[in-house]
Length: 423
Image (tube, rainbow, N blue to C red; front, side):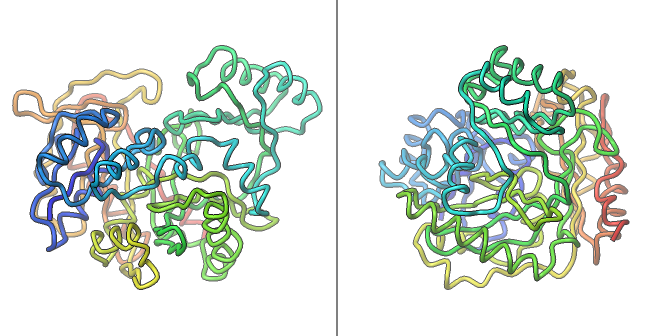
């Protein structure tokens, strides 16, 4: 069969790498893809939001399955566009992807269906938000309602900081129209864990757990980013916690979306906080996490095509999801200055070192080919992933592998997975 993957980042490279393992797949295309993806798939220069061209290409090439990976096209209705043209597509339709597209929607859904989450209020008026903050407890969390590349969240320790945050989100439109509505939420403490789940609208099956590191600098300092590294599994996400989440979060979320007429098919990302008062939902995403996919997918034993088709066909209950009994760690190599400002276009050396090395991966996030040479083309450049028999070994392997790569401006955190030392 022929498969088209829509997207161009590290997540998409991880997805394409998994699809390439399937003996059912004869040809993989990626739109637009990147330098790394181009080694295992044919990249076509079509943007992720150009639905007309994407559908036309899928028809011309007689694509059997389209995988829509990023949030923007999912929320805007890419899956609907492919389905309307009679093309099988993996991912939620627009009316279900709203669970990520609007934080206000997802918070209201959790409140209505008693799914544990932080206390909150939604605001469309900046003055009313400022007024509310006068009576709030600190620290407090401000969230732009819409999509903001994982960066539309501000943690404010004082009233002054919070008021400045309201101005930034709602008045200065730092995150564009994503800040037309804003959620003000109680600050939760505890360990974070990410659980990606396959869904077919009725059945939900969690994958192995992961933990992301969002802040730009060591010690969880600096600005929020799209993610500076991950490890899987989380040693803090026990069987008991998984059972609790299945009954109180995962199944109720599926049932809630179905009850709202928004049947969710695809991957539901549950960002969870293990608080002193139990596990609560931090956020939902409507797709594979990035860089969570880079540590979860390499550990999956199943043929990903079988699982994706089961999600589309409503037969996920017949799939037994299996993951390797090991661990994986991903360290993101970024451009110095990310997520604010940084230079691009530097040659990347050492990529060939990963070829023919089992259990080591280099996922391209922000790269491009220029005159036959791979150069940096984004804030997050590469995700260096390694497996090991346990998290300690995987972490040592991943950091060792980061030394194989060099480019001007290379920057990374040195404490990815450090939480595992505290077990």
